[in-house]
Image 1 (tube, rainbow, N blue to C red):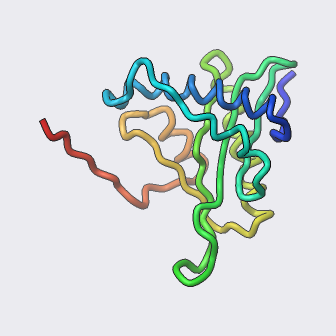
Image 2 (image 1 turned 180 degrees about the horizontal axis):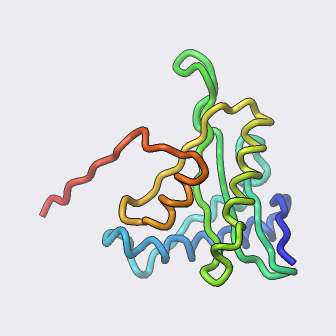
Length: 153
């Protein structure tokens, strides 16, 4: 049985950290600049304690199979009219994909944003990641900024 659980303990934050390493490995094919022996800083360790951050895990029974993280980037004020939410990471283990788990994680994220009066949410996607782009387009995301890079050989 698939269940979603808001992260409220350091133990579950550490599970998000482990899943985020799998996310980075899966995205290495889109970015040759990612080291094979990379080290991540475990910022999820305290992430779940801050009201401007959101962490949710997906479980198959007791087995963690995916996560989403999001945060409030800008608070409404002098510079922006409305606060902006940012999805920092979304990952579902390969064998569990195409079962609506990513969509369910996103729905929980949208609800967190609504509860915080966030009117806009964004995510960064590698241009070659067609699977992710299809998912986000199906969810109503549109391209609003194109970040370009140049290799300086």
